[in-house]
Image 1 (tube, rainbow, N blue to C red):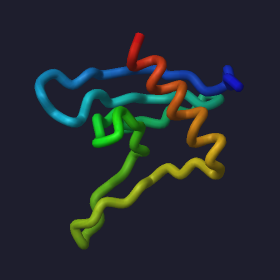
Image 2: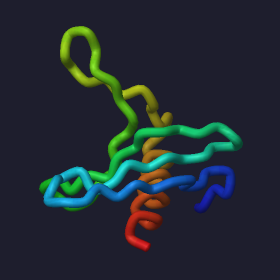
Image 3: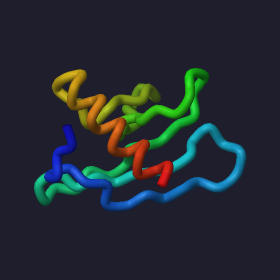
Image 4: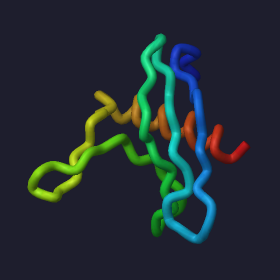
Length: 84
C-alpha cells in the first residue's frame, strides 16, 4: 500500500558507531516533515518520529501517525529508502 503522496525527500546518514543511523525528511503532499530518525534498537532498525525537548528536559514527539497502518507505512517507506 504505497502512497505516492508520501516520499522520502532526503536521507542524511550518520557516520560512526552510533545507534542513530540517519536523519530523514519526508514530503507529504507538498509539506516537508523534517527530523525523522532511523535508529538501531535492540530489536533492529526502527523509525523514530520528530521530537523536541521541553523545558522540563523530557523529549516530546511533534508528529504523530494517526493509525498503526500509517505508522507501518511510514516505517516501511523510510527503512526501504535507508537500505537502498
